[in-house]
Image 1 (spheres, chains in turn blue, purple):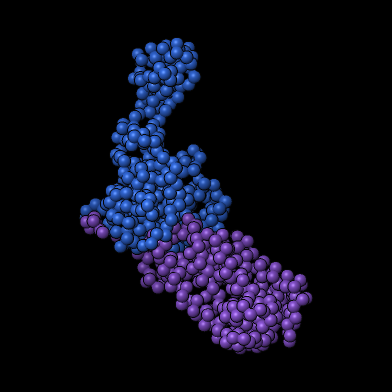
Image 2: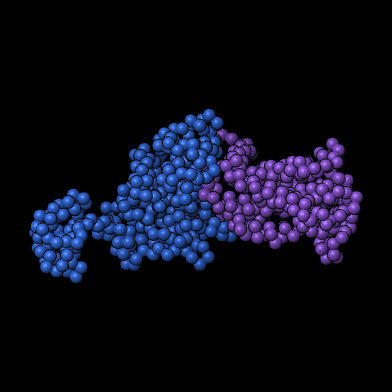
Length: 328
Length: 279
């Protein structure tokens, strides 16, 4: 039996009136891999995953999920894909557990079996503490966990996570990430959309950068980061004299670049925090006056600037809520 | 359109149920889901109970003293009117709830799941229907407490319950359709206030149609809500109006209106829902 391709799109296109949300997108997710669709708000990420989940009909091109066409074989697609949206798709007026039981029942489980499935998910996703609380009273992070669990009643052939950590505080983000990592360890095929480069970096095998509905770049996180520029430690000197001193001092020990105008010496920091500590120690020992010593990671903005030549635009809010009704 | 060559396919997990059985099961599960919200969001039910109660109190104790209907006490004249009006206001209630519910994220999850899609809308209708029944029951009990004394024989009671159920079914579908068309609860309230509210007042609800000016009288004589009010009043009080065919035969007229609404609204609502899905 040949390998099943989890997601495959060809020339996928979606327009809303004059606005082209997704343009001629070719996307491929192999079974057992994690692919991240990375882009700013309005890049077409949500539109793409909604087409894959049979919630929107493409205007042109085609898409297959586990070998089934999303338009002509939507029923089969729905049985094989699970979508977790950026706005938790749960019934607010039911408790966390009631939601999970309902989803299990709708997936064909009997009463007792559905309860057992729900309890298993509650344990796996650390939901015990708030299992009997109404979803509308849960925090953002708690909701995402229940939402993730609800997508995993049946192990889907492919799980689509649409911006799973947008709007979460750093601690909740870590919890969601570790949950996602455990799914990846179990071999779940994942398509993950995100606005955060570090999220794609932390979770994905392959990243597809999209902007204005088009693919801008694709590759492993390492390949993308080489294109974007690596992380560095910036040392900002207190004045021009101190800048000259720090520049001389660091040039001998590290791989640096500098900007006299901004009194900044940038040190390549492949080891991140360890490099930061080393640079800070050297600077402190020499007693040089500095305004700031900080670790800089390439941001999505850097990636955009490097790969598209323009700044990621945040003004289009079309990913927030798509008009789903467009004459078929 | 399928440019991608047929590739290897994953086996599809089946539910082992035939389509009609799935439809029934999914509708039942989703209806229970919406009913569970009632005790948790009781204000939703207030919409269908507070408004008629305010009308009852206003007309019974404020305007009622100035209204004289020959041959029947105003209390007995008023309550059938309020019940007919509540039935018609079910359109607004179902519309507001639907325009709200359909924008909830959970509907998207249901749509992306391997369930009977028709069940999503039939559950919406069932849930709204149950809310209307509950609301109307509260109004009737309130009326009985205030001293409404309907004069019902057993066959009339059965006929009344049957027609009311038919009416609620028709109006719920109409409300669900409108709710999907307008897409915002505020817009639905607007439609309700501009169209249904005046029609509900013109229907001989609070004052006899015969005494109205020529224009409102002509409208009232063919207002579908007049048939509702006429039906409730005819069956509970034996009072019949005159002036148009439907006022003389309100039960038959009401049944025909309801069937017409169902014949128009059900296919339109289903079409609308499918289209929303296909996007």
